[in-house]
Length: 80
Figure (cartoon, one colour):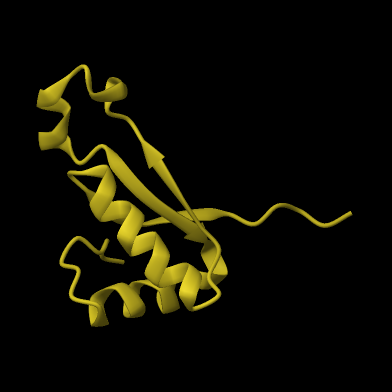
């Protein structure tokens, strides 16, 4: 039985739609990605200031994903 891969946050976004577009870039490059949203369903507008959308990929895809997002013009890419 294989172990589950570690997941890495590669970018954070203030708004869900920005994260959805970025996830599309990764999926077009055959990198599986998930977007985790913590915006209280839009009921808490102040949460937009804490980057509630986190784009996550498998650890083995993280460097390539960051490069793709950076080349697409995203400045929200996580360092490290």
